[in-house]
Image (cartoon, each protein chain N blue to C red):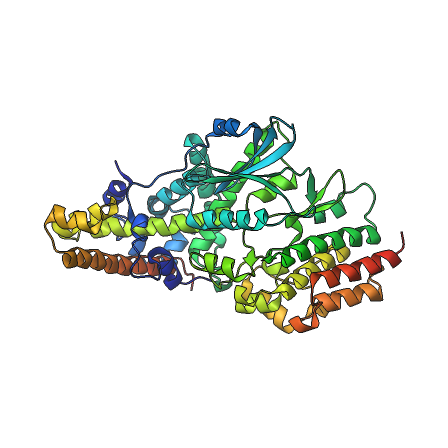
Length: 218
Length: 319
């Protein structure tokens, strides 16, 4: 199943009624996570699991290594979430999650390096790879994750023609070939593209606001 | 802290005519390919092993098949993020115009099509702060000042060639184990002072957002962003480096937050936590005052002047 298909099935944003995560107050949800409430954690993993997994893959990990890192992130979160307090100076929830995920990946790479036989602990090697990469990479992945979720939700709302045209554009088709393939004028293709863009932008904004609200410990 | 508007700008871009944002939504997302390590043999390089791995890059140690010398290969993972590609291109652009014993040397650039690999000096050594703290014998002040002056020489040379490093800090200054000489590395966010290069970079990436490391950045850069970056900013960064090497602590009591750093830089000045120690003579204090002054015009006009001051003090410092 494609990643978009998985999101569609999960119905990430907005979550279907059975997913209570965003139907309760944010304080209540954080409290449930802090109390290790099984249902709250299941929802949390449904929403953020694909992001952490995809981030692990992008960080150069493979297969079982990714599973280890994902587990390590859940472990760190379950230990630190009870102490989580929103502090604007320290950034948004995504920054907090990013730090935990980046540290898990960093630990993994450090452990792997320690097992190798070549001399690995030189400052040269460490500094040739930018240590800030992992945080930047998480930020990129987090944004892409919101994009994919917004698209999965929007697909259900678009007309058949708009969906087909937009899918073709995503697959790399240019405006001219869309005009020919769907028998549309240039203006019509541009209009579909721009309208979908506006709706995606609005939806992503809403998702991000919601995320900040629900992880804002007032 | 970045806002949701910043995130949306990063996703959709600020140019409404660009279609680059569509890639974010493509369902055919690719994951990094495994590096084609065998391909380096074509260039006469024998891989010794992978020595470091980051989110975007991998570093190998390799041996030149002809000369036997060791080299570092730095390459991006494919497909690379745009920002990472630009950073690597910027580093290539800077290092290929710099030939100085105090700056890591680029031997070659291997183009794999989608990604490039920089072939550069392999340095058996450690960062300058680790060098001062891990030696068998404590580093003497005159030794430290001699090495520091050599660092300044290399930075001044880069300035004369139109390159501002913009991220001078101990971890970007390596000391070669065999010769105890410094090498400056990581020109990934370098700024070019000549107009032609500035225009070339501006067209794709140059922004005026803050970049660098807060702890080593001067107040005007932290407050106003990279547009405020000048030679005086490098004098300041080197002043912080020297201060830390001598005193073992930063000149400010900085927290991790950028806003805290701005407040500290603009309101305290370095004297807030500065204490005279046994090692801090009047002449050394003068160097700190001239390099860490809050007003850029009160700092040494060039890094060469800072080097001269360090050398004069080294000559008079006790063994």
